[in-house]
Length: 558
Image: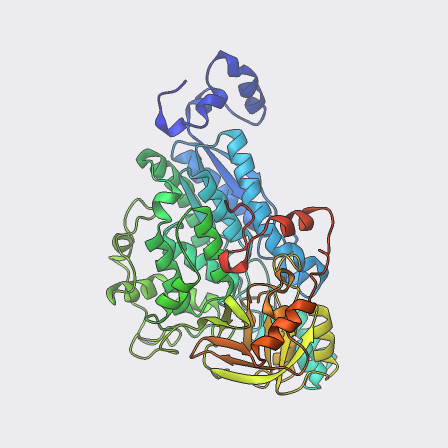
């Protein structure tokens, strides 16, 4: 066996007479004698032509492979799955979305573990394949770099996928005719790349870069660009440097690195899904991170970026002024980031940021620290008799910070959507969508379709929506998700009845059902858990093994 410590996993697979059969198989895919002496670098590609987010990633994977080969490694490209939230939203198929995160992590672990890759590059471009890739890398703990596939360009008239969802609601209200809806549908998605606002994909890309697991600048590049191709080649080469220095993901994914990621997500006004995914990634990396850490950090970190969905600008416009690196330098100089955290460059975060130039004086996208959009976090962790173990809200301040109204209860997203569209839902309602949690859904669907319909119908300031499901990064309005315990587990959300008064206070961080304790207990005594919706298959396995959303909704917790 080889004494090259960079080949600790591939050596047992290909070295020695007894591995002739292994080498014979690999010769058929292009290995030469010299290749067997090189560290093997697996390139985990999430390519698929079923979604614009990932349709270009096959080319990016080849660039990463070239970078690894030129640096002295031997690359092998393999695929994992992806699904499209934008396509599946509002349907039964959306139940597979969060499940896919676990499948992706499982598949990367499975392939790399079986084949003996010494290092990895993982390239993701959509909401769940990004944390899924990161979870797979953390499980394997072999020198690795994550690459973001890049952001899409805006559609005509500054439109994007959320414009399409909200156009449907505007039509239902009578503010837009069918021709206008179709025009937006035809032009809002002009080509490859992830959804263009600070939705979940761009949020997670930024979090991963802030954590140090992507090369500087990777999160803020256009999907189709020479810059993104160069990023991929550099990532392939960076793995060889990490192998030389024996730097592994868990050396980088420390508690302080997760705190950096949370800080940057807040400053960018990022998606509520970051709470779920960062908790899951921390669990996989065996880092002690809790939902209340978002509260602690959120008290001192302001929202600075005026980005969609609640703001005005798109990621491509942030790319044009320098991406997130100048923002991170601002935060570091203000003492809000841990500068000594190690990164995939082999250098510290502070070293990576040392020569970063500030944003242009003329830009209006990222506010100064002394002129924030919101003085503290938009991500609110709420507790109360409706969510004893926590819920997650995204309150930018534009929606207000307090809402009290009458409950209108639905047992599925589809039921709620129908009542929004037909006018049943009116101002003053608090929509309660339950049995959509990790177990009860199963799969914790995003509520982008109903939240977009609410906004499109002009009810964004007049209606609240709470759920044990979750929200798209594109959702906005007065919305509270991740309510735990979920309804399937007998959480208080299962006991709400039509007409009950629900009060949400995003300053006190509370969510309360206005009934007496004895009434709550009487309802609990009458409640029976419904049968799980799927008896067999991946959704059934997921429902049996998934833990609470307050712990990341992972399926491999010890």
